[in-house]
Image (cartoon, rainbow, N blue to C red; front, side, top):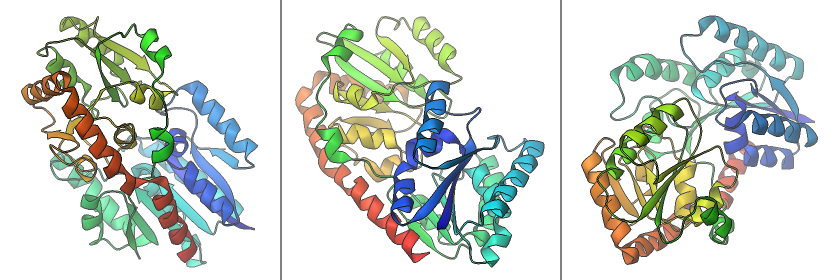
Length: 378
């Protein structure tokens, strides 16, 4: 039986973004293995990571727990991970290695270099290069040359937004493909009903509900929405789904801004889609994205969007039609647009309906068809 390895720095990347690819490979007759860090660094809860590992094993998928670091300064740990990846590849003689995440992708390409000479094929999906328009200069100095160099050890480089695709065309990969993200089940999300239990859980009655989904980190830029809400008038509730290192800092900020009665920090939730369908406005001020699934799910839920004018977001949101694209740090503009949507229910519905049509271009069926073609071509 043909063998394929799905590799990522952390297990949550595979859990959240790659299960469809695993299903496609299995349907094509591959024995699929998974290699990732199941021990730390995951964006889901420890309970979910353990549960995910068990789900994979129940599917007959062999799991390798390799502690791949996420910091580029962890040289010693990277060397150790590289050796373990190479050993796994030697033991299994994979036909395809599909890798994800910057450090995991680099280690995988070096570890698999000799196996490509024997006919093995390597796919690397860039879920958003760290170098992009507006990125810090250090990102360009560090990550650009590394990605460009490693591209020569790549049979297929997949990019998920148009800015990355244009840039990757100048790299040395044998083939560069644009795939519109991981795809979402637009019909399934559209059919989800509003959940009264969620409204009751947070004592929501007639408030306009704003929601954000994302790791509590600097990258997700939650502070901007909190500071904008200090200037917003009206009856609203803001709920944030996600966990991360900045949780206590954000809770402290909400109290300083006297928003503690209006803001709810939910932590990691498995009912995010239901929460979206029970909300009115989606806020997404992130500094950096590839092609954000949370934003796609909000669009499929029929929500208007107020988000940052950055790579990835621009592929999804049409300014003034599906929502507003704003500068990441423009607190005043965020507050103005939030106020406008809170006060105008008709505009919320109009923008939400526009997004319901727009998101059909990113449906899972379309993405899966493209991915199946890529695997078959290899």
